[in-house]
Length: 256
Length: 82
Image (cartoon, rainbow over all chains, first blue to last red; front, side, top):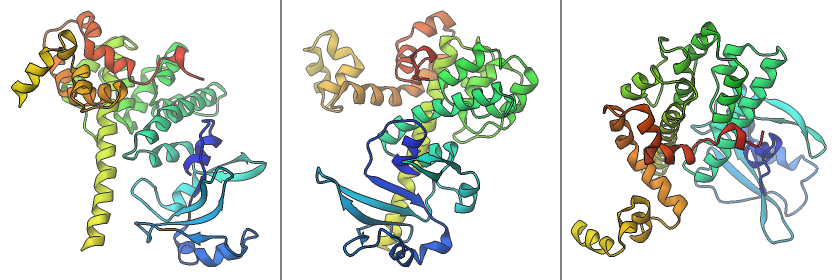
């Protein structure tokens, strides 16, 4: 996960931290496991401070020529991560730095970046484009049903690409995709193509006035795309609020 | 306080009436990027209220909030790196 996973998926990103999610059963023996690796030399794996040590631990593994510290960082859990077993089952294995490495799946990585930080949302914006482009390629090669791909559309270039190649023409596909859509942006993109479709319950809830407008607007028009951007902004605000609340709850629990 | 602010902004003429410029001039935002983000976040209720009016789609497409939502949102396909 983290910056190296972002790089693996194609976004050039300067990072000096290595972030990993670990299984619950490995958490308590993390130190012992690290000491058995070939990196374990005296002075290595000095544990750093963590304000949520029961779920996040970090170990310094070196210092770059420019003086920046390199850290190996471990997450046991947080509100943006699914259970390790689920995340691991959805992993993507690929070559990175000359080795075959398991990475968090792209949808899981996007979810993990829905934090308070503006920089993470800039990554989300690009990663959404990568995800949509991958899905369109898989649809084109017959590896993914159209409805499954449409159900995850989140970016404007992704939507416009599906629209341009005629992948939103099947009412059945769009209806099926809408039924399993997980973000307001996806609903926003798809609804004008099937205006009478039923909608899933989502958080944050889409304002009724926006739904009414989406049911009458021309697909792909500027107003349509602006409505989706309003929904995206609402979504980001809600996710940022949730991340802030999670951090405040942890800090409050630590004080009590 | 609001009256004092209005008086101060009036000295900047048209610029003082621009909500984004106002955020910059009052020090609430440090950059244009930050000011536009703050303005848009705060203006979503206004945008949704606009949808309740009888504004036609052409006028809605030309509205400054619509333009700003588009310019600060997910980029168009032709500008994508993919």
